[in-house]
Length: 201
Image (cartoon, rainbow, N blue to C red):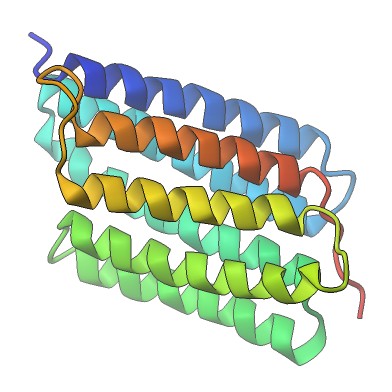
């Protein structure tokens, strides 16, 4: 029995599109570490969506913690990729250390308390930093930053929809709408990430 069929379908759709974005980004990385980091973020998000869909669809409770933990990996990788693309020197090293520390602290916390609110908090921090980095670089016309900012905006909207608990139909709930809006966000991220280049100063 599938307990939440539409949530399973939209999660799996999100996983498929995000995995494709990851593979395509990796194939087009051309030595750019920023693109490789974002490719890792896409692949982690794809795995999280697949695990989350299975958890919701088949009530496999043991998959929830792995779902949460891989989303933390995605959050850290997004921040790392954007740091490499937009900063250099000591600031880049500090941001990469922050991404690693954030992931370690997140994992330690959710190991004891895996409520989704902590995923929201962790990704919220990453989104804020990614948006700040690309907003500053957008002023200097860095390619890809505008699309990544659009992706962050869509992700925030998706999160607000998910938190609202508003259901459009008994067979189409807030989680399903969240997945579809986040899918649009992934496409925006991908459009920006494929244009990124590592900053060399």
